[in-house]
Structures are given as structure tokens and as C-alpha cells.
Amino acid sequence: MKRLLMHSPITVAALWILVYLLITLFPLMVLLLYPPPAQGFWIDFSVALGFIGLSMMVLQFVLTARVNRIESSYGIDILLQFHRYTSLVAFVMVLAHPIILFIGQPETLQLLNFPQAPWRARLAVLGTLAFLTMVMTTIWRKPLQIPYEPWRASHTILAVLAVGLGFGHAIGVGNYLGLFWKVVLWSGMILFALWLILYVRLIKPWLMMKKPYVVEEILPQRGDVWILALRPLGHEGFTFHPGQFAWLTLNITPFSMREHPFSMSSSGDHADRIEFGIKEIGDFTKRIKDYQPGTRAYLDGPYGVFTIDRYWDSAGFVLIAGGVGITPIYSILLTAAERQDDRPFLLIYAAPTWEEITYREAIEDLKKLLHLTVVYVLRQAQDDWQGDTGYVDRELLAKYIPLHRGSRHYFVCAAPVMMDAVEKALFELEVPVTNVHMEHFNLA
Image 1: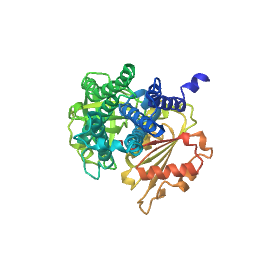
Image 2 (image 1 turned 60 degrees about the vertical axis):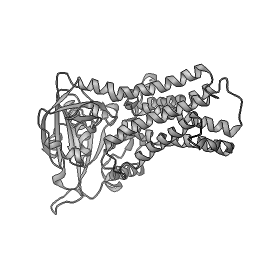
Image 3 (image 1 turned 135 degrees about the vertical axis):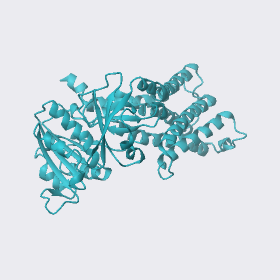
Image 4 (image 1 turned 30 degrees about the vertical axis):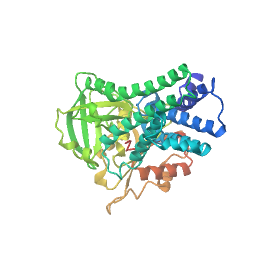
């Protein structure tokens, strides 16, 4: 019993949160050993905010490094959301540090005179400007129409500058890093962050180059979806938990940072052929059909926690898909059929029209192999349509989901508007929040 508890997803996730808090506060607690003379509550408080903000900035590199042990506890979508929010918190702390200092000691305002300010103050100004630019270009990337690849490269450079300049400022001030061993501690944290950058930007792409894939075929599917089938070239490939995704680099080197996340749609137990269901939405996805068999590809994966493999003791599953959100769910059903899973599955699949039901024929075939009930919900149904119409709302869910809500796990993948509506409806229907699992389309 204790062993199961220690390996439960909730327990592991809680432990990672505890680790995050300890690492964030540990450098500050270390600084309190042999502290310098007190300068007043507000001054010391502003310094504490600065150091906590700097610690949080360093930890951002961990959150975005796709560390499997951490990612498997939450999923990359949640980690990236956490990264965004904690970055804003860190920025507020870093900004509050000089503001409180200026209010408590008005004479320090002269440090903003950049040409005449000491170098430690110049580093602080430049680091803050780098952090501000990074935050602003992230929040308004789409309104400013900044392409993803240049933004991603500049985001990394600005992050390194913000952390490095902030650390240089702290050393220059010297009051709290006057002892050599404190400088060594912080230097270790900074070097670890730089190592993560080197690993993500150089080492991992190099490892991916050694395990290439090749496009085997590209097949059309309903709903403007293309099936991209890859096979490993010179290696065994990888298996995955059905419902997971990988970052795909197609026809270019993985060093280019031009990669896109897509859910696998094939069986998770077959490493010799990996398929993706890709809908024509953006510039890259609209070109998928133009690639030829034999095109080189590279995969970074698998990632994600959107899988029934984590809930082997569940009595059954409710799968709710909208449009191309069927892709990871189809992988779940296909793999379950191959494993002869005898648990009940309920699939609620919403689409604009009957002709846009992706994998329609294959899903009907799976009904012969699984204890599978399928509910199609069309927004634009023909006159002879006898099924459900409209949207997946509380009324429709109440009609089909089991009476004992907590006996199933619910997996939802759709457009954001539909996912928000379904999540709210499931909450109102008293489905335990721990039993609801969401997969978002856009991770960038």
C-alpha cells in the first residue's frame, strides 16, 4: 500500500512542487547564514525579493528543458502554463526590488543615471530591461506578429542575459554574497541553467540526428486531416503510451529549433511505424501533404500524461473529442483494441458535419473489438440525421456518462472553447476533478 501511494501521480506531483519551493527559497536561507548588518526591514525585504526572483528565473530553464521525470508528473502543457505564470511572478519580484529600494533610500535613484552609475547598477538596469523585453515579446508575440522561430531564439538569449546580468549585479553589490562559498553556490545554480540550455539546444538535437526517421507515406483523412507515417531509419524507434505526443522536425536539421508538437495516432506498442494525424490549420500543417516519401524527419518524444496507461485500475473511460482532438484518443482506442482491453469505453465525438468525422470508418471497426459506445455530435446535421446535434454541454453529458461519476476517468481533447465548456459541465455534474484529464492543442 505504501509503495503504491509513493508512486501515485498525485504524490509524485506534490513532491515536485515541494522540491520547487525548497530550491526557490534555499539560496535565500543560505544568505541568512552569516548575514550582513541589517539595513532596515524594507531594504532587507527588497533584497529578499530580488534573490527569490533570481532563483525563480534560474528554475525557468528547468521547467522548459522537457525533463522526463518532471514532465511525466504533470504534462508539458501544465508545465508551460506554470512557466508563464511563475515568470511573471519572478518579474514582479525583480521589479519590486529596486522600487522598494528607491522608496526606502531615495538617494539611490541616482543609480539610474546610466553613464555615471557604477557597473553593478548598470548590470541591474540591463538585466531588468532584458527581462522586460522577454516578457513583453512573449505576451504580445502574436499581436506583434513575431515568427515563432526568431521569438524562441531571442527568448533564450534574453533569458540568459537577464539571469547572467542579475547574478553579476548581486556579486557587484557584495553585501549578501561577500563570502566565497555563497558565490560558489549561486555560480553552481547559474552553471546548471546554462548546462540545460546547452543540452536542449545542442546535445539533444545532436542525439536526434543519430536517430532519424523517414516519411513512409502521407494519406488523406476526413476533416482536412493528413496521416503522416514515419518509420525509424537505422534504429528501433520508440514505443509510447497511447495519447502521448512528440515534437516533429521535418525536412530540416533539428538544430534549427523549428519543431512542432503533434499527438501520435498509431498504436503505442509498435515502434516500427509511428503515425500522426495532422489537420490543415497553419502554414506548416498546410504543407504536410506536399512532402514526399523518403523525406527525413526527427522526433523528440514521447511526452505527455494524456493516457489511460496511468489508470490501469479504472473501471472504464469516457473519451471526449472535438475535431482533430480525436487524434490522441484514436491512438488510445486502437492500442486498447490490440491489447484486448475488456473495460467499457464511451467516445463522445463532436464535429461540424458527418463528413468531417476523422477516422470514422476505423472507429466503427473498433466497435467490433472493444466494449465501445460512440456518440457523434454534429453542429450541422442533415435532415435525415437521427443522432445528437449542437454542442457537448451539460445536458448531453448527463445523458450519456455513467451514473457513478467517479468510476471512470475522463479524457478531453478539443478546441479551447469546447474544452472549457466540457470541463465546467463535468464539474457541475460532480465528476471528481482528479478524474478529468485535458489535452491542449497549442503548446507554443
